Image 1 (spheres, one colour):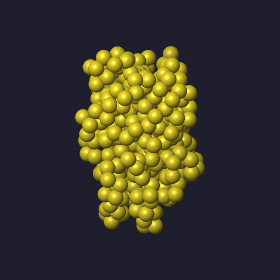
Image 2: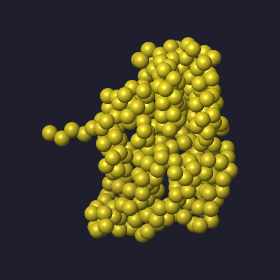
Image 3: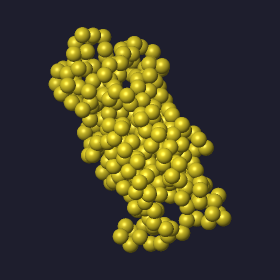
Image 4: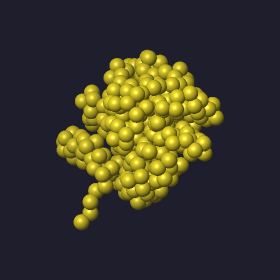
Length: 332
């Protein structure tokens, strides 16, 4: 008997909503599709539309590459001309939104790490009749921007889950390291940890754009306070850097991180990273594009003004191997 893996089961609520939207609109008819000879699947027989995805990540960010892969999969299915751009500077990200408006795209998917900096641009898109969905960052305040939906990880919840997992592992003093100032999703993760972690919880800033400076800041903090027994980094490459640094120094400090990249898997398997919080970025990209296609097709909206959660999922040495196989196959 075929059994769905746990991760597939977690994705079913969002997928079921999409299928329900298709069944309950357009006279109950499923979307028209034609054969996609290039990919061997089906492609929507609907007018071609243009969707811009805009992020707060620099080009080449491995985590956002996974989001893009999910978005591209939905675009291929939905007959969408998909365009991606990103910038870590909030004002420049707002400019990218304006550029998408000026080019008269049919829909915009945007991450919102700084709602105050992006709200005006997103509202301009709404005023121009361009539907917008939010993804990845912005679950705290996306509704105020005029976006239709949000696909991502409720970050306060993810921090709470992290705190509870650290309780189970018996840690007593955690250090949460924020790598970019002004990004509310990072602050929310640390706040959630503080809410649920029963031990002592500290928070510091270390510049994530300079790995050497980042690890040096953490090393100095650990040296000044030997009672810290767990460091929480908020990005996969940062977690890898700290885990390797801790291992080489011979310290016994546990390392926890967020998200995945190819270098995280072996460190989970060895226990050098105790666990990571997976927010299923492929699903974030896929749902962002697919939901905009549905909205353009028949006006359906997922979420009822509530965030659609794609995480948090705790991954450690007991369950990360299967996820790695999905990633190798291009399905994650």
